[in-house]
Length: 361
Image (cartoon, rainbow, N blue to C red; front, side):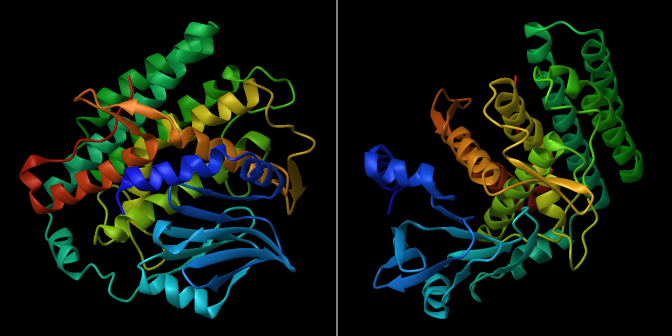
């Protein structure tokens, strides 16, 4: 089925008042060929060509199998064996995550291997890897700078202005780095400068942000950043596998049997434009509530049963927005991820052409 037909089907469902009310009531979402099951106690079962999302004896929704590309299951929900088998038959991947967005593992069809491309990836020279790693870090720093510049135009700040200058300087240095560890140093310094100014872009006194903290997230802003990055990372990982690339072989990050380095590489250029900008929007528009949408446990702060579906709804709506490509054609932001994965795949086949990361202006 073509992308246009899939999108048309989805929009018709979203415009239906009954479906929209269900969307707001239950904490699951089906957007752009991805099924999110985030409400606890749900199970997904098979009924012919349909997947039924149920809670106890109530059917929350039914989704046509041909329209699905992946399923993300959060927390204590489950999928029947029959549904899993049908998903594998149709090349639909399934990811199991904690309620806070940590990915425990994935179920993939056996035919979705990446041996041929993996060989090409392993044959990439150190020079080719370094050049791509430089471009990825530069794109991350540039995109972070653009986000701060947009905020600076709305509300002038000396701290933000200094961070903008620092990111410009570090971008130049990153382009001349001769080793990966040196490059990672510039990236880390840039991230520290960027997040030192990020808090000054937040207009709500309830959301205090002094810096990035990850394991565990130290406050509500960090909770949203971590959750958004995890959702985005999982999408990229699926697209990487769909293209037949080895997700554990990257250029910037070091891979291991537990770390899909390529997904960590490609997410860098998307962090600021897709997740950070969304967090700024949710806070500055008073959409998230620091008291109702978060829970403090185990020394950290996390999105709760109210916050997760609210964040996911906003995230998916943001990913539906269109951007104009270099040829003047409008494309949804989902396509940006797919486009960059294919761009990297082309680089693997023809390293001499290099890799061009996604950059905002």
